[in-house]
Image 1 (cartoon, rainbow, N blue to C red):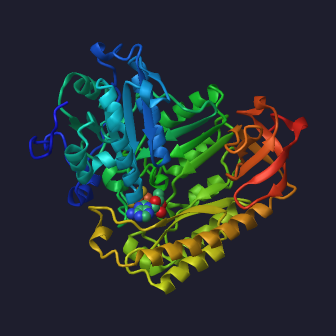
Image 2: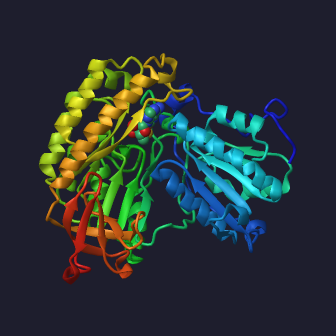
Length: 494
Ligand code: 5AD
Ligand code: SF4
């Protein structure tokens, strides 16, 4: 492969980085539904006798994209390997949400250089959210000529054609569309789980929280038609799947963009899915602004709809929420929180919180702590603010010193841990339903799974329980997990 830099080649026809200005105008653009995905004849057997490896960073959306890329590669004859030395194609599915996620990927791309030198025929591809960023593409072009292929989140369905170009051309292949995204319905999927599955209900995000890169890397909000989703869920139920998670960056906006369905939202979709014979249904990620009463009413019906709500708050200060562009105040969040809690008894709540947003004062951070005290979250993800190029917040001065950010994070984590322990303690001596997911990571003698409320439960039992819903009596509630005893006589009972 020849060495290239962006100065030698004009990539502008392949690479169209998203711009804030264009993104703001995109809501009016029509979404195209593509149903004619197929593998070109000359690529249909190109992977026969060859192996692929996909490394995935980031969120569930990326995990699911990896399942789609794996499905496409398997349709071309490739088999999966977990040994990079044996792989003929390695794809790195990247995450751009914070700087440390990007640094990890760059470090890893560096280490793959030796592999490429040992095996020049290896195709090394970089895809996912980082590929949607101009700075990243330029850095790869300039510093990592061992990469053969870069493609964006809107180009996944073009993988066969792109792989072909990469295999037969000596130049780095770059295809990143900034167009705001279509929906490709008939892509193959090689699901990683046999009893748990991701189901995309919508793509993209139009919320434009000022710190967040996702609306640029994932394009505009576009919902799949409910008929397509219901059909996919029915098929998963038929195949014996026990749990599905409905996925979207902002699932509460589901349906708003569907022209032929007025007032059809996530509540309506969940109400339909509730009637399908699949034991557990989850959904993520919610946005407090769009969480409506109808959804709460439907969730209150229970059944297969799991009582776990992931409701990112980001900050407990209305002033910070305002400059984050979240569209709600501390009071509105708390009102919603209590409304859901009243309607769905025993629901567990998790959240996402960012500390050290530009100008965040000690008092504003204290407001976040006091909100955590009021909500007593079961768990959550906490982050240090990280400026993302091209977002409005990145134009503000990142003026909270790192040691202050770290100290705030530590204090927040300590408080979150206290409430995690407190909520787990309520499970002591209770018998809960667990979907057994596999052996525990720490001890292969122990099985591990989740409750409906998304608590991790570890217990001893035969391996044959993997994939089953079982009853477990909690004997030791710890800070982040629950230990218990399998209640053998109720095996298989929901
Ligand atoms: N810096 C830190 N955390 C971020 N998140 C999103 N963007 C940033 C950023 N620039 C967090 C939010 C979001 C979660 C997925 O990642 O809390 O909910
Ligand atoms: Fe990012 Fe906000 Fe969209 Fe979530 S809702 S993906 S934080 S812009």
